[in-house]
Length: 171
Image (cartoon, rainbow, N blue to C red; front, side, top):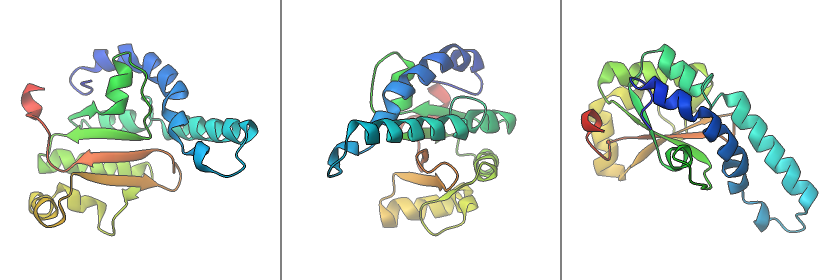
């Protein structure tokens, strides 16, 4: 779904995204692999995941709100986009394609850092805005996404594509 620049599309799907993530996104946790895991444990994990998703503001006031307030150009892709189009799908992350103009990327990273997000790998969050560093990560590390994690919102991982999987301008 297109977000900034087509905000009405996003506003029209937020309710569906919230509903489906409550059903699908949080059930993506690996509750079935824990020995002795019972329904009470599953309900607690599901509640905690949904709480983390709500508190992180994944649905418009936090992540999307921060990106929009910073006038960031981005597209939501992956599982959340599938859910927004009306299909149930398990998802445990938020996949975002940024317009990789260095200023746009820097604004996005500063907005996400303001929400408590940091890179999973030991680099500065602003390194992502540097095209030469992204090129090096792609060529040397075969990196596809730059993952951001937050101690405040441990169940909401944000994956930023280091190279757009499509032409951003025509998407």
